[in-house]
Structures are given as C-alpha cells and as structure tokens.
Image (cartoon, rainbow, N blue to C red; front, side, top):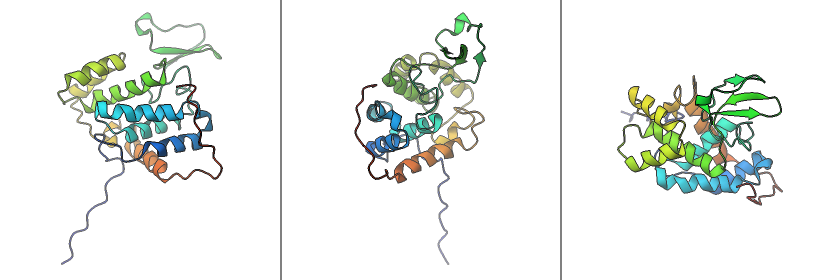
Length: 224
C-alpha cells in the first residue's frame, strides 16, 4: 500500500516566530530594483528590520514582506517622508476635508496633506528606525498576547504608544492566538481576504528576484 502523501503547506502558514529564512541582501536588492527611489534608505531600512529580529523573536523577512505588501514596495503615500508609516499603523481610511481639524483627543494620530488641505487618520514617524520598532511592537501586541514577557511588553508600549495597549486588549479579549500571517487576516487587515497568503507571496517574490543587468546596487543611506 502506498504511503499517504503529505499535504502541501497552505500559503500564509509560515510561523511568524524565529529567524529569517531569506538573507537581508536579497531584500535590499529587491527593494532597490523594484523602487529605485528607495536608494537613500533601502539598505538602512532592511538592516533595521534584521537588527530588531533578535530582540522580538519575530522573523524579519516576514515583517519586511508585510511592509512591502502594505506599501507597494515603499511607493505608497503613507510610506513616504514625513509619514514613514510602513505597515498601515493607525490608518483607517478616515479623512477630514479642508477647514476641519482632528479632535484634540486624537492628537498625533492624524496627518495633514499640505497639498490638498485634507487630514488623514494614521500614524507618522520621525525616523525609519522608530517606524520599524513600532511595526515590531504592534506585531508583538498580537502574537505575544498570551506570552509572558514583561520586558517586551514594556518596550512595545513605548515603541507603539498610540496602538499597543488597545491592540493587546483586543487580542486578549477575543482570544487571538496568532502565530502565522494567515492569523492576521481580519485582524491586522480588515477584511483581509488572502492577507497572509499575500505576505508569503511577497516573500516568495523577493526570494525569486533577479536584478536586471546593469542595475546600480550602490546604497547611500542619506535618508536613514
């Protein structure tokens, strides 16, 4: 009798915990190749994600893949200076037309588009370093909801000051035991259909990327 065939893993079911499977250089080259305008910060951004991996115990390559998915490989309005929002933190789709101002109680949670005079709800970060830390911290709010690590909780509360406590409370109240990108669907992203699969698909795209001949692979890091 033939041995039963193992079922292929479902796309998006990789563990968020542990070490990156992809080398950081592959992310640097992919980012630069897909978005040449990232040259002033590409190397620093990728390096920061990998530096934070040991602190949080979360895979840098999956968080970077999520960042690239959320931002269109760092081409979205939210990801650009001065906003530097790498993963949709606090972005709700809410806006206020010219002439209106955000509630005082939500100071720091809105950003003004000077060109149009419209306010948009979402977080901004003074540096890419702070933005990467906030991404890890917010992910920790979800995946670490039932793990006992007061040191990381304290670090996360500082790095993601507008969102961590609320996200953690929701994760606990709703018993979210999130361990994979698929677990983020309907939680990090709403409705988030195929959200986890999209993150892993981005990871696979990075892994398979071959830069075009003649691509200038120098980085200057002037904006990091």
